[in-house]
Length: 112
Length: 114
Image (tube, rainbow over the protein chains, first blue to last red):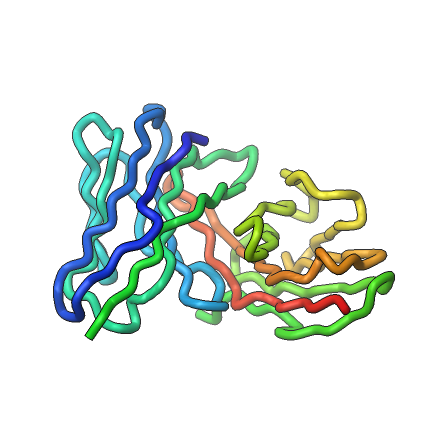
């Protein structure tokens, strides 16, 4: 699976959009970009994933650059409950297995 | 639909003991993966089971083992516990739909080894 690079930490004001970047410059053509988040001492929570096109669901939007070397997770109206560590993972869905390789993630602090 | 459940949620053991953790996947999910999370090493993959067979294994010693039952429920066992085994143990289940497979995590079992 390709390596990802994320900022260690970010702050965001409550009610504003939180834009979390992820660099995956070595991504291959069949690797998907996944985002998970982990609120303190809980299990990681799936947020969204995509391959080439931008994706949106009830939680967030995922913007993937045309060259697929980077992506941005957007939380449109951040709340205090969005404070968490956000992980960007790239991998190929495979019948050979589902191992996820977690990096350090970005610690997002949403402030009132 | 109920999420992934793990039991027990908290556990205290002493060095040298063994422990068994249980995971019940989301109904219909056949793949179960286990992860260890520590402050120093972060989230690390232990192993994955699919249809009662181990499909993938991480870089952990043989003291860590697991199994999956015919109803997809899974257990992991750690023998001869060491202080460094203190961690949050996470289970995730997944199902493949339309070529995409997404893992959903349980709340974890927090193990403290004294």
